[in-house]
Length: 219
Image (cartoon, rainbow, N blue to C red):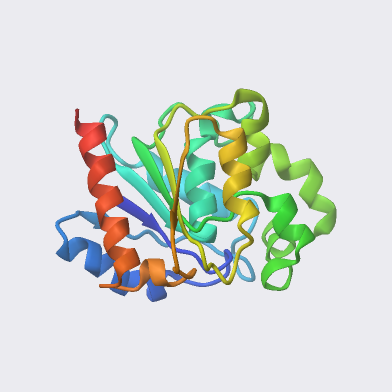
């Protein structure tokens, strides 16, 4: 099973990813595309994180699945894989982790994302203001969570395009530098959105990675 988290800088709904979810289903995967509360409405911090944790915790214990996400959905996937590193008193701390993670052109570093003011200060909107960034990092930022631990223990692959027009390359290499067990796969000549374009060469690479991860977690 593949649980697919949509992107859109934590603002937009899942409709834009439904063709890609259908494409994965046509390639033989059971796909779940959950909705969640988003910035600018009923979501943001903490509701977005509440919903992701709840959605994943409803999966029967012991059922293997790959958690995949694109852009900000990749951030949420990486965050979910690091829930075991959260402070013990954090509301989302838990040991029920994904079997594997495939992060597609993910936001990995909220500090850098905020510094670059990506997508009109999307990080500040997610967290409820610039003044909330630093105190919330230990709860919401994958890079911060990994700096001391060095690994989540969850098989993790970052797949991104060399020609990504949305996110700086450092979002991907920086995560790999702190997560010693993560794999980083770069697709030449591939943009940010080509990864989720059904039938593209990049989307076929996504299918191949999902199959590889699915085989790995079934062994």
